[in-house]
Image (cartoon, rainbow, N blue to C red; front, side, top):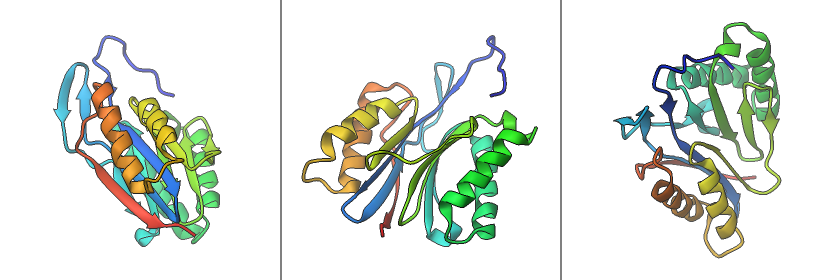
Length: 186
């Protein structure tokens, strides 16, 4: 990861949660972007559709870095259509070895109808053991809430909405302005 100047306020951003349950995969993200102790934006869109709508993804970290990574992932998905895992592995290889990309500070959750993955600049391409995964400053709060709810009667979207609400009540870097994208799973 790139080194930051400790004298500058640090950008804190987000909670992204992914739940795969009952034939659906849902990714939800909050809209808050904070710089130091100041909220600079409350309605950022950190969850998006990729690959003509067949992939959904969410990011935590520096916004410009995440957009760069989304663009690179989109190109890899065009190169390897229908192969999300392969596209993600190729992206993370580039992310680790390319001098420019290596400096990008972000993490991503991505999913298609078959697979859910976490991507990081450390070279991680991780598939969750269960159907739940989260990233960002409020990620652990949302993850804990979603794991508590996943065995119950709620569907994937209801779990994401409730868990994100809980995270927003606990994490000062998370708000209740949600963007949610869903896909029917295979």
